[in-house]
Image (cartoon, rainbow, N blue to C red; front, side, top):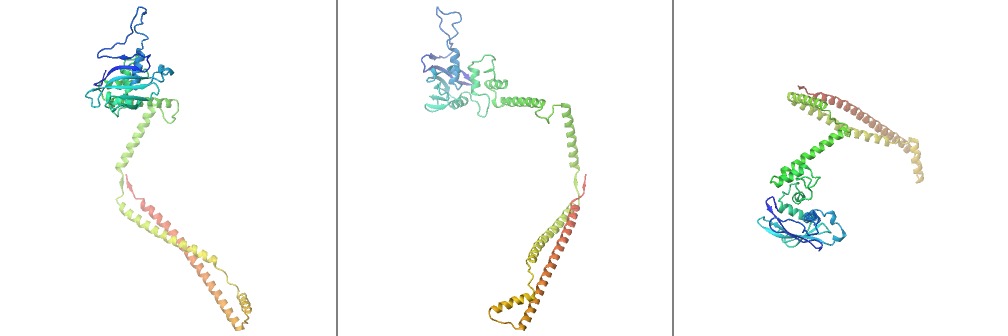
Length: 375
């Protein structure tokens, strides 16, 4: 068998179950037939000798799935072995390779005699497929199609309904990639047909969804879509014309400087207003904490009781002088409160003035920023 310029040869196929016949092959044409006897009926030379089973087992040994008729308890402990002539890693020669695969588990393959896997190696079936892809078929690593299984299905056939398909459900584009690869064409380029096929299927699905109302905002009315497209193009052309004729006012720099000056003035007013608001809160707190002093007679009586308790009697002159001190203290407190109230009033008045100035500057800033444009 020659595949993509690489030659491989099947020497033998055997099983650990003695009920299976050992098949050996020679160079040249090998034909699998049954021996006819005197008791053979018409057609017995071609039927019930295991030709289909041989093909399915060979596909299984080369990385395929286990045929359903072999999934029986009687075969669970057995395995199959093939002797193959496979190309060396360098591709310059051929090596005799032994491949053994058990009926259960189906995920492991034992190889020996191949330079691609030094020594006797136990591999997962996916690794075995990858080795066949790389060293036998030379499929590029970044190619999605064809797969090793598709190529084996074309070369070792179990489906004959279509000469270019390996099975009935194979897509036309996959068959094209497979045949093209076997003819020496690039699988990367051939694989683009898969992208086209997927886009076509997606387009059909979208159109079906629109027809069924699943995508309400889309329409398949071609005249309406063309009219909408023409309207959108006219709007685009108008916007492009407007952008080409747009010109900034020549006094833009003057406007920008004026705007910067106004912004600075507004910022200064904001800073001053912040300080005055803090001062207003402090004055409010001080005025709330101010306590009216007791009346002079009451304060004198309290002081007399204190002195009486320590055994002293105040002369009248001391009491009069104390009354004068009390009056002076009350005057100081009144003056302090009056001063605080006046300062608070001045702060609130300045805040109102700042607010008015800030509004005026803001209005001027808006007028300055509205520079002219010529379309």
